[in-house]
Image (tube, rainbow, N blue to C red; front, top):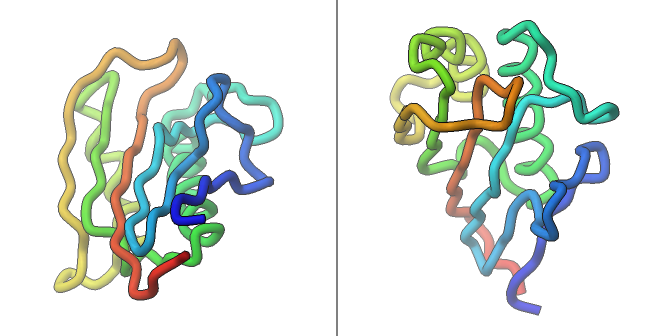
Length: 131
């Protein structure tokens, strides 16, 4: 099978019939990644906790896809309030510590699910092909 859906078991699945990510050969693209509690599906009120959970979910997706943060080429960040961009930076720096090896990043304002402050979408190009 050329296309493979990525659905880490520790993450709450999407409400719609879509995977958390999809891998074709060495290309990985995520669906919307939000920072809800993986057990309850609720968004923490604390924005920092919510952002941490979103980055944790991205890490789980990468792991399930046999990818690493080094494979990520671009991340799109969708904010309810663009002033929250600075809250992402500590998690960004933890995931991508080398200033000479970071993916492109684009932040924009979006209408998000009530209670959600951030949604992530990522694209990765992996070193190995998957068939």
